[in-house]
Figure 1 (cartoon, rainbow, N blue to C red):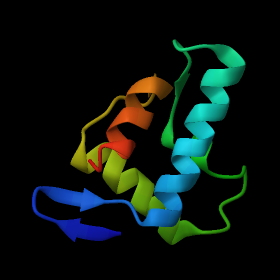
Figure 2 (cartoon, rainbow, N blue to C red):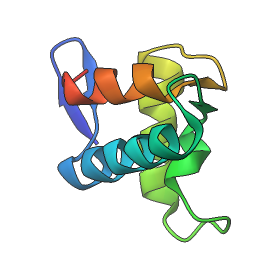
Figure 3 (tube, one colour):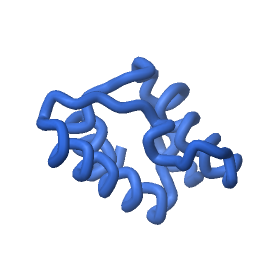
Figure 4 (tube, rainbow, N blue to C red):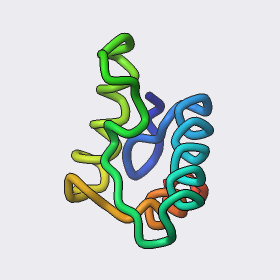
Length: 81
């Protein structure tokens, strides 16, 4: 996790993974598909620090709902938010 002016930003590896997952979901299910930050992880919690980083970004930083449109999330991440 990186602290920047205005809040928290994801580490580059998580950003790349999240964008790839959003792209995959959009390609498979269309532009209206929703997802949660859990979509960025396997079913078992093998990296709790990374999971918490995503949760901090999603919940505390941006106050997003549990499910959001993948298109919106991809745009936010790509914009460096």
